[in-house]
Image 1 (tube, each protein chain N blue to C red):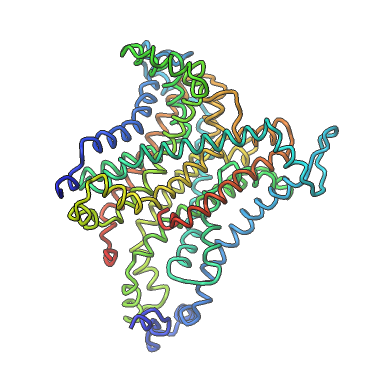
Image 2 (image 1 turned 135 degrees about the vertical axis):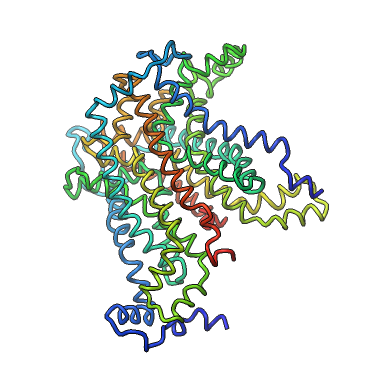
Length: 321
Length: 270
C-alpha cells in the first residue's frame, strides 16, 4: 500500500478535469518528478553556488597567494607562504585563544540554556508557555548592537554592576575575581570574563531554541516509563533526557561556537587588547592591507567548523536545527 | 515517583528563572539610560531623567537615512530569501535524490560558518570582479544567509504536513498549482511568515557581513557601531537603542499571535 501512496502516478489528477496550459504544465511537472525537483532546486542552488561558493573559492584562492612585503602588492602565484605566516606563535596564539573562548561560551550556554529549554518544553503550559516563548524570542530578535551596548553600560567601571556590588558589599569579591590571572583585568569591561558574559548573553537564545525543539520531541511517556522502572529523576535525566536532547545541544552549539569564532565586534568593544580571530581578519584586510593573510585567517574558522559540522552530523544535529 | 517528574523541582525553577532574568535585565538598563541627563559617562544610577534625547533623535537626518537603508536592504533580502528558501524546502522536504546531503549542507553553510567568513569572501570576490559597493552588494550578502532561515521554517512545516492532504487535493482533481495555493500555502503560511520575519530581523540587525559589503554606506547597525567605538552623544545612542527594541518587539508579538495555534494545523498531529 505504501508504495502506491508515494508513487507519483497515482497522484495524477483525472484527465477529464481541464485542459488549460496551467493544467498541462502541472501534469508535466507531476508526471516528471525530476523536472519538478529541478525547477524547485535550480534557483536556490544557482544563487548559493554562484554568489556564495564563488565568493568562498575566491577567498580560498587568496589565502594561497602572497604579498610582496616591500611593494605591498599581491603576488598571484600559489604558495603556502601565507599559511606559514599563520603558524607564527603570535598568530597561532590568536587562533587558539579564539577557539578556547568559543568552546567556553558554548559549554556555558548549554549549561544555562538547558534548564530554560527543559522548563519551557516540559512544564510550561498555555500562557506560561507563551510567556517563555516570547521571553526567549525577544532577546533573540533584539538588536545585537543594542545588547552589546547594554552590557557596556553594565560592565563599565562606573556602571551598574559595580554600583550593585558596592551596595551589596561584594566589591571585595569582584576585585578578587578581577585580580585573578587570565579571567581578570583592570575592570569587567576589559577582561575575558566580560567578553564571555556578553557572548553568552548574545547567543543564549540560539542555544535554547534547538534544545527546546529536541526536548519537545521526547515523549512524556518515556520519562514516566523510566520513573516507573525505578530510575531517580537524576538517572532519568542522564540516561533518557540528555541523550535525546544532545542533537539539540549540538545544533545550538553550531550557532554559539561559530558566532563566537567569527565575532570581532564584542572583543573590540569589551575585552582585552589581545586579539581574536575576527579582529585579525578585519585588521589584516583593512589596516594592514594583507589580503592573503586575512584570507588565511578566515580559512581557520572554515576548517574548525568543518570538523564541528562533521561531528554534529554524526550526532544527528541537523534534524534539530 | 511520578509526581517527582511531572512537577518542576525548585532547582529547575530557579535555574530557568535565572536564565530568563539574565536574558532580560540588560535590556531594562538600556531603557533606563535613554532618559538619563548624564551625557558623558555610564554613571549608575543616572543623576536625573529627561525626555529631551527623543527630540534630538527625531531631528537627526543621519539616523533616518541609516534606518531607511536598513529597512530597504532587509526587505529585499527577505523577499529573495522567501522565494529561494521556500523552493529549496519544497525540493528537500519530500524528495530523495542524489546529492541531497551536499545541498542541505550548502544551505546551512552560510549561517554555520562565521559571518566574518561570508563577509570577507564577498569583499574579496567584489574586489576581483570589480563590483563597486552599492545597495545590491549589501543585499547579496544578506540574502545569502537569510535563505536558510526561511528554509528551516518551511521545511519543518512541510515535513509535518500530512501527505494525504496533498493526495486528497489531487484525487479531487486539483492540479499542482491549485494544490499549492489552496492546500500547501495555507498550511505553511504561518511558518513562511515566521521565517520571513526572522530573516528580516537578521538582515536588519546584521553588522559583521555588512561592514565588509557596505563600503561607505551606513545601515543602522553600522551607525550604532560607529557610535559605540567613537561616541558623539551617548544618550542619543541610548534612545536609538530603545527605538530598535520597540521596533523589533512589535513584529515578534505580531508573529506570535499570527502563528498561535498554528501547531494544530490539520494533519500536523502525526
